[in-house]
Amino acid sequence: MAKAGLPTPRFAPARTPEELEAAIKSVGFPAILKPASGAEAKFVAEVHNAAEARAALAALTEKVRVEAQEDGAFSGAVGLVMEQFLEGDEVDVDVVMQDGKAVFSSVTDNWPTKRPSFLATGSSLPSHLSADVQKQLTELAVKSAEALGLGVGVLHIEMKQTPEGPRVIEVNARMGGVYVRDWVRAVWGVDLVEEGLMAAAGVPGKPYKSPKALKHLEGRFLIPEASGTLE
Image 1 (cartoon, rainbow, N blue to C red):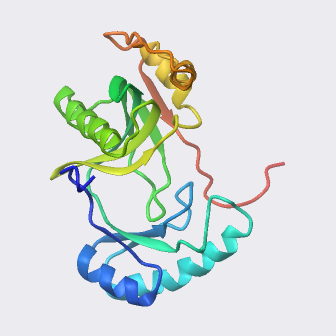
Image 2: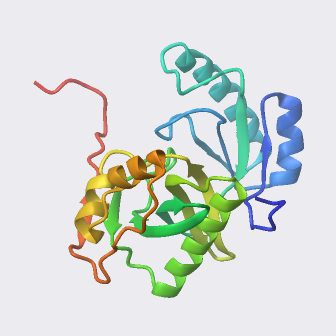
């Protein structure tokens, strides 16, 4: 993305104490330490100074090592990454690409995450952001897909609208999980499963997106405050 001239958050590998010290100098604070391979916001730490970062490196490295034995999404071999903390509204941009061009896009608001672990708390579709901000986010999402060579298929791109403008958190070369397919179909009349199948089969087409939202959806995620068993 940097080679394509696109704005990118500061980041650096933090697999060892030596790499962490270099990352502290290049990334700065506040920052995020998290597994380079993982899922579900597990083992994500917000750090505000070098002492917190050093303590987090030791703790998270051990947690990831243990988790990797049970969950294939995690890998102790690739270690941690340190990333610039991004202020601002978080969104998901779902995109359908055909022949290297976007033929459909949808912006979903993510409610403020539950810190310090950044668990998702809820979503809104269609987005409450202004049309201009949504356009900025979508344009960067599509340019990012193009820069990464993801020209065919359904993508799920997580972003933030920061005080400096839109920034990409991650680009997923897949459809969004859980509720995303159902919500996009209900609000815009576009079935991302069908679009993914058509892209895989090489069937060109442009899905029809309703000019106005067919529904307005607000969804709150239920997050338990403690572990236990419901009987």
